[in-house]
Every structure is written in structure tokens, then in C-alpha cells.
Length: 121
Image 1: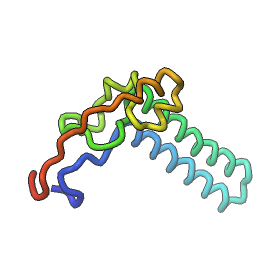
Image 2: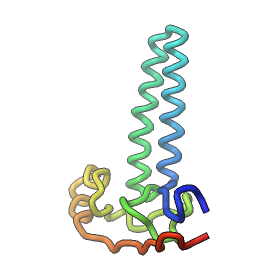
Image 3: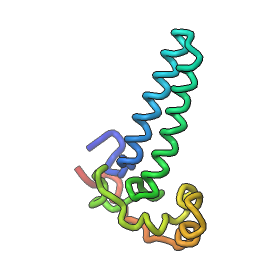
């Protein structure tokens, strides 16, 4: 059992990719600051912006996750969300994806059952 209990922490391809790109961008910008190289700072910050865009696009493609807990069968970070093409309920990223996703995202989705406290190994 982890320190967070038996819960879904939302590890996804979109999350890992975006985090890695953002870390690389911030690291590059920090090195450029230390080297006093202004173009490098801009390149590093551009990679950080790119990280946000790539994460959002991966989320829309189904490699992210909807808000809230997921069923335990979908906890693996490599699990693609088959319902993402219609949008997730209460998801700002899906609503920003266009009017078709905003209408589809207005549908409520079923909540995943959570284990009771102290349950699980």
C-alpha cells in the first residue's frame, strides 16, 4: 500500500509527457539564465508553453483522464480513455476543445466506487 492509500493518482501518458516537457523547458531556461543567454531563456519558456499544448492535445486524444476517480481497471498509466472523443463532464480542457465537446461534456458520468478506509493491500 502506498502512502496515499488505495487511490488513483491520475498517472497518464498526457500527464507524464507534459510534466517531462515542462521539466526540460524549465531546466533549459534555468541553464540559459545561468549562462546569461537570453535566446535560451525564450527557447526554454517556449518548451514550457509547448508542454501545456501537448498535454491538452493528448488529453483530447484520450491519453488523459477525466476529473475524479477512475475504476481500478483503468489505473494503469497506459490505459487510453475510450470515451474521450465525446468529452469529459466538468472538464475545462474538453470544453476548450470546441462546441461539440462542450455539449457532449455536459452529460453527467457515473462515479467510480471507492474502497472503504483501511481496505486494500
